[in-house]
Length: 190
Image (cartoon, rainbow, N blue to C red):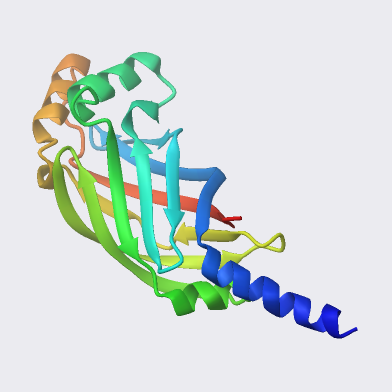
């Protein structure tokens, strides 16, 4: 009987110290706006990430996995916008308070202001987004953005690439501010 009572405490201690690994079906989406009124939702198909036991979090986005549902547009974004031959990935790094992770691992829904750095196209900028951390019944954590992260093209020298996309697609305009949303699922590391 005593073993049954202590088992959840040992499990909680292991989860709080082991760190977390990103798994599917995690998703990162972004919206593009062209010619003022046409909005489209796109995504990246390959993400990697983890949260270390000290709260250091990393999310790596494979930019060649951009998925706009139009193959030629994916290729053009890879080559003209992201320049994936030079900049294969974007990376978000952040520090998450370990108490927040421990409380979430114990079953408490948490809101948290996530602040970190986004490295994209060879440059780095501060980002901040409120997130909701929800514990799942199977021991995983679901982290979702409560507001979009607004990525400014000029912060990452992406404006010239956007202009190339405008020209080749014969568009009047493509927005240079892109809202990004995510739902990330983390499982405890063994």
